[in-house]
Image: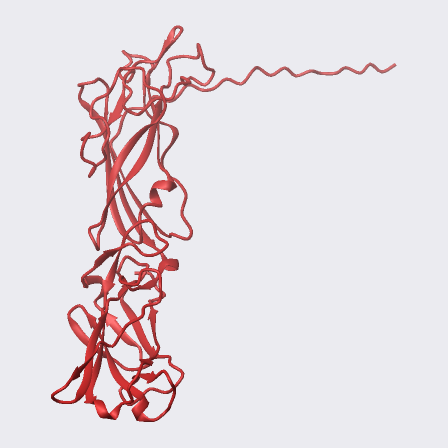
Length: 369
């Protein structure tokens, strides 16, 4: 008779390892990122949850009250948050405000980082993983105590939420955050942590030709014709305010502008014409005009249907505008159009109303600068 024996293997309950002894070390990190606003990158994680910055469970517990603070509580160029640790019973994460500057325009925006800390403990009296369960702001300088154990270091979490990145328009942005670690409220600096941000942001879906005086409607522009009773002539000049937004923070290598006479009848020899509203196809039913674009102080004649390349976009004067459909202002390049009607004898034109159509097209480089 065979005897079968069942063997039962008993395994001890897995125990978490004590955090390794860690001494504070200064660190500099460059966060260089690029994205288009149509595809945001998500939160930027600077320190994952419970990133161990300091821990020593014996020898006087030098890091029991360790905490992180900013260098200013009022100015955000290197991060704005409390400059002294707090021994009050604080709970939850804390906010740090960081000033971001767009290098082309000088536009400034404050974005928010969210930071918190947890304490690694001397033992496992209240937690099997050696970590105190309470989350506090980075500048919380109190000692966590649980039974016979107490805090012996600091673990940090720090991130920039994507909701803050959404506040940055297209352009090249730079920012810096500097945090100092201290062991006591007024103790010596243990370590300094610097995060240097450089963001290249595009907004290809927002490329637009903006007419400030016609915010969300098609521009209707008069030629401003004036009658000279002495010379018996008519002629005039009018200007249409126009601004070009390239979706690249006005840093394109060039912009291509094309103006077309899109009326139902061919234009006259100047390239652009308006026609008598009652019809007709001879010269007496037509008034001719020219179109000139002003770019950075230079007047550029535009030929009908011929693209004009505009260079020096990255050094041109800028204008702050709020484009239709956008919630944040952006900088565009002013390029007003001038419509000139040369003087002609009034007797050579049929009295009445004239109209026509112009179409303006903008081409931007496909390569991000």
